[in-house]
Each structure stands twice: as C-alpha cells, then as structure tokens.
Image: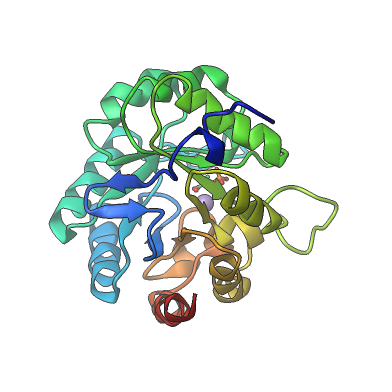
Length: 266
Ligand code: PEP
Ligand code: MN
C-alpha cells in the first residue's frame, strides 16, 4: 500500500476529538454502555455509574444489525433520543451505529460520533457518505476483512474529506469457535506502527465471553490500542442483546483501574 492518506508519510498522526475526549493521546479512551439502548431508566442508571468510574464516552445501539430479522432491531429514533438525553445529563459524549446512509443527517442531530458496524465496513456508499460529513467516525473491522481491506475502508472516508476516523478492532471470524470471534491484536500493532489514525479495541465482540473481557482489555492496551469499547450493563444477564459478553459495573471498574495503572508504565 502506498500513497494513502492514512500513511504516516502523508502527515502528522491524527488525533480525533469528540467533544472533550481525544483519541490518539497518552490517555486511553474508554467507551462503555449496553449493546442496545433499552429504555431511559436503564440507560440513565448505566450512564451515571460510568461517569462516576471515569469512563470517557457512552455507547448504545439504536439501530441494531441482528443476525436474525426476528430479533430485536433497536429502538431506532426513540433510542437516539434516549442516548442523547442521557449523554447530556451525565456529560459524556456518545457513539451510536448508523446502518443506512439515509439516516446519517438525522443521527447527527443526536450523536457525537457515528459508528460504522462490522457488517457495514464494506458498504462503500455509506463510507463515502460519512466521509462527506465532518463527524468523528468509529470504523469497525469487518468480520471477515483483512487488515488491508479495513485500512482501505478508512481511506474511503478520508478521501471524501473527513479525517476524523478511529479504527476499531472487534475480532474476525476464524475456524476457532470457542470464542465468538478471534480478537486479532496483530492489527493493532500494524496500525500503530505504520499508520497515522487512532485504533481502539472491542473485547466484547472480540471474545463473546464476559469472563475474557478484562484480560483482553488489558492485552489490547498493552498492544498499543488508543482505547476500548466495552459492553456493560447494570444487569448484564438481562441485556436484550449480547448478554453473554456484557460485563457488570463492578467488572468494568476493575478494568478502568487496571488501564490507569497500565497508562503509568506505557
Ligand atoms: C456493536 O457494537 O453493537 C456491534 C453490533 O458491533 P459489530 O458491528 O462489531 O458487530
Ligand atoms: Mn453488541
């Protein structure tokens, strides 16, 4: 790959600002919240706990890309309203997924950062459309994407004029089936060594198993990641989606303090 906008040779390393949060600085950015926005009551309780423990941003899906069309598809507009209200109340910037280019303009009335999900990493129309905005974009790695394909997806966004791209490694599909996906930390090392955009890790989708999330969170930071996005809930077993990989507030607190310790030695 050469002559790419994401290449280190093409300019200074890119720092992506989302309100008061900056990706690509010494401080690691921790994003957390439920897989799906479920209700205002649950979201506000989660949001307050996250704020108190020092998490930097709030996540929650309003448009959910589910494997089965009969599974919960998200609260859609109502979900956007809830996550925005909670973000403002607890003073945390928010990130939520947009699945359809037609929803971008409206989503930007609510969210501080747009997530492009794994299943949409190859949706070049969607990539170009978010590239025409100035919004910060969290670009997840496709579930079967090579590192190069993922980097080219970032290039699609940047080549339209939007440099505010943060990559997110979320695991890839391999022959291994003990875990939901195989969390490829090689990709993090590659991005940090050769490219100039920030990269974070999603150990929740990367493992699919909540008991592996603390270990793989620390491993991600040790591999050089600029942050983490972790699914958490006040009652993990009752999460409407991805319960098996969702961690408790207690577990998240331990991860946050572990990251703080790691930051001192890195
Ligand atoms: C998510 O973050 O809720 C999600 C659906 O992730 P992915 O696109 O990585 O599967
Ligand atoms: Mn999920």
